[in-house]
Length: 119
Length: 107
Image (spheres, each protein chain N blue to C red):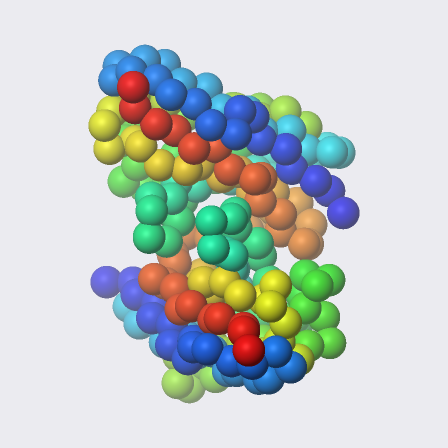
């Protein structure tokens, strides 16, 4: 069974840092682009970042450039999101998602992990 | 960046009704358009990819159409379990952008 499980969310003060993890199983992780997508409470979906199969290419939404870093460890079947200089508007549920090549859709999602930025 | 606009933002329909949701891109995205269903407290689920291809396991009452800038998601006969929020997503070029969502309720 294809599965993605996020962890690492929690309460952090403005300006603080947090590292999210996503453990993948049931598929060949190293064959897929992977993304992080977030959803603020009561709001819509926002794509955050993506990373190529070998980690050689990364893209970010403008609002997190210079603050967030996406990475992966194919040996551990894991995806990460290092979040620095966190702001209140980064408060959201963060989902990791598997991205299909060519059609670039998200065909598998984790259950999400909540990040709350508040003093 | 290309913007995605969904309409309506919400709708209420009866079981068995035909429901149509539209998504408009601010510039042409060919058929690089996907549709997702999200139920409260759950992760989104892929319904339609490449504008009109049905994801495996998704009921055939869901269909998608369109190309260029205008796209449609249709539920041919609304069921109770279709109560959810639906999002379009463009995958033509980064940033991948979602529409603002359409909440579908049952009358």
